[in-house]
Amino acid sequence: MTDTIPHLTLNDGQRIAQIGFGTWPLDDGQAETAVQTALGSGYRLIDTAARYGNEVGVGRGIAASGLPRAEVQITSKLRGSEHGYDSTLRAFDATLADLGTDYLDLYLVHWPLPMRDLYVDTWRAFVRLREEGRIRSIGVSNFQPAHIERLQSETGVLPAVNQIELHPDFTQADLRAWHAQQGIVIESWSPLGRGALLQDASVLRLAQKHGRSAAQILLRWHVQHGLVAIPKSQDPLRMRQNLQVFDFALDADDLAALALLDGEHRQGAHPDTNDER
Ligand code: A2P
Image 1 (cartoon, rainbow, N blue to C red):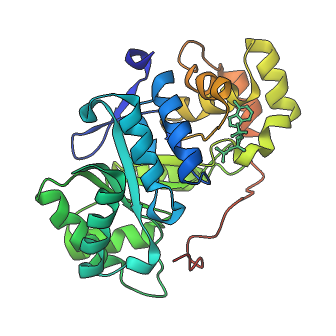
Image 2 (cartoon, rainbow, N blue to C red):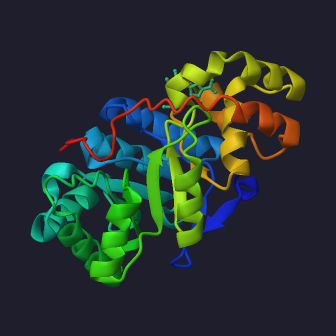
């Protein structure tokens, strides 16, 4: 299974699996079990965040899988309350200790928090940590183009990834085109629209047509749009199912039907105004 997960190449030359395992909103105990099961099912990209409060559990789950560290791609995120150069360096050390590892594959600034205006200093610390070899790739989450342009103009370093809310009910076509132009890979959070799209009549019709589940149709949509999706499930069967999306394809009619679902419905917070620390 692992061999069949396609990868995208990031603008720093690193590669990232197109489907990973999301761990929000699992607590430590749930995350430990779920991550071990996910790795046993073939996932190799695990997504967590300091703010989720489950890094210890994620680390235990990875250890319990018995996989060599190099075979697992670990993403974590800097929480908003730690913005700033020195506090970022300290928070990163705490994240590594909690995860029980000595490097991250991908570290993201969780939210831009423009009202605090510390994301550029934060980014300078990210650049340093990457230069020191303690992070393979650095990126952002919930950043708007203006925030990313500022990182580029003030530090000269573009993020490799921007992880944002994205699903067929919130496709953000202009934003996707902008990221493609910049060479920044988008990771979709809440790729299933927090489950809301699973009952949609068009999605269910396509599920029947392809002999797949609604979740597989939605995840295949992400894959065919060149995105990385990180679905979360605590159910071992759904976990496996969510990874089995590389042996069928949506055709042009299917994609046209799914395009009609875009109601521009955001499920989570607005990136500019959210003050999630
Ligand atoms: P569960 O953990 O009970 O499987 P999103 O990733 O968009 O935030 O959506 C996550 C939600 O979708 C979770 O509540 C998860 O619940 C559910 N989910 C994940 N995969 C599937 C699936 N294959 N079929 C149905 N529900 C799913």
